[in-house]
Length: 500
Ligand code: GLA
Image (cartoon, rainbow, N blue to C red; front, top):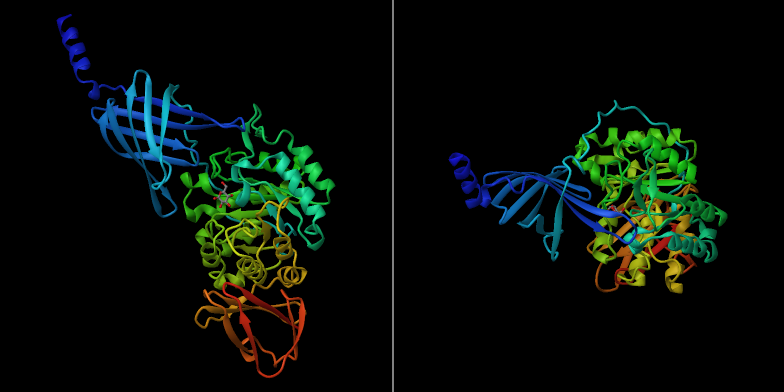
């Protein structure tokens, strides 16, 4: 009895070294779309050492460092993202039966304070990886013979996309001339997902009351509809991914009438290495082919693992070649002008994707947006508008619907353009076209207008042309001599089409 009493006294006297923090803790953050963003801290305390895991949205950290105990602790979590390490820090303390924790979602972000409660062991446990099948060539689905054209919700709406916005975009695209020049897909990006029903079927959240009805509506406008998922358990925004449900999800998309899938690596990084991406993407490539509906397959894994070399072999119609674009001159040009070497990997049905358009989102000038559109056309890149199509200036609509520039993008030979020279701040790119001619972009990356001379002998195996079409001015030009000279506005472009 006396020994037991002493033991209890010791426990009370040293609360930091009790096992108080051990347990599975969850922070519940209900979102307006009816889903609950949950962070799990699965902790094991031994003396002053805390181990365990933290699962937050698409991230899954192993605790690698800790200090303190229940009356004040700091945890450092670490995870691998491909070959890069990502770390997170949580500080907290036990207050009654609540765990008060604080973290920063990004190093520069404000501190987020959260309260966690105990939940049963195993709840929210990260699923184990599934074995991968051997590699094979997934048959070509025959789609996207020219780069896909349409709209995607992410750049403008992010988590605010809903049924009404999607219908609004379909109405706008069908009525404002975009459909007439070839735009076709209305693509819902991340944050449409709720979870799974008792049979494991993916269900949309409150923002999308009836996905089939929405698809029917978009189809009724003569357009197509796209959706988004991840090969991981969670998407980038932390929503439900397709991991372990690939076949079922592909069938669900087909039943809803979906025509396009963007498939975003994110949560898969916690289970698979970059070298395994091909085998992982192959699962959905196979599943889509078996789903019984033609569905464009768009890979999004930020250009890692040299995706251009195997994207087509997993049935991919397009693959992102870079991280996310932002609506700035710096971001757009860093991405767009870095695509040169990937040229040989583009072909009808299989496109390099330097990310969606930012045209009309307000962060660049009209000249800069003309550069964006011209470069994406020369790169044979998917043209997915990322602005609010219901409200744009006539100048932006004109940029997005320039038929002559779009004809370059949609050229049926599908040869991606290449840089042919880069004297100083100017760059000249050229793209061979099916009619034997060329599209030429003379870009000025400088802060001042530049007078520029182009030697025809640098463009390709052609003799000096006698006329050209100026694709932004919609003008025929008479040419003389071995050179062409033009003044190119700052951050602007002169785009020409030369006939054979
Ligand atoms: C990633 C993708 C983006 C977008 C978001 C959605 O960052 O690269 O294009 O789909 O996820 O969460």
